[in-house]
Length: 171
Image (cartoon, rainbow, N blue to C red):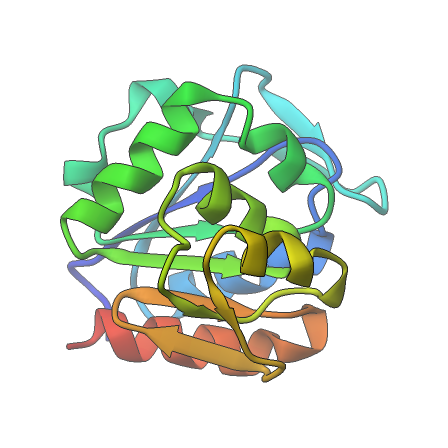
């Protein structure tokens, strides 16, 4: 049970629907308090057009108030990494040793935040070169855990991805 755990999930347009909704629902099912934050809009559309109403703006939340951040993939990470507030939030979570979970294209946010260097990661194969160029060591596995950083490749990896997030938060 994750009753006293607080998780924030980042949202932007063209998020991969399953990579946002599956962890959100799974973590809620485990008892975590889950907040979804965007970059300024109230509603975002997934790659398949599924609408998502967020709880607030990322700039209004503080990393110190959360135990984990989940960054879904799709094309959203390419937008998310352009916001200073997003990168600062991720850096602060990393500095505090809190769980950072990134799936698919979300590795871009880790790279842009400067926290990929020297870390073991996985990601969608399309950004493998970006991650290795950022100094990460890439593995083609369903989930890779390196300290507090948890990464996965694609929607079919979501069961393993969520299992490791839950495990890390349960410690």
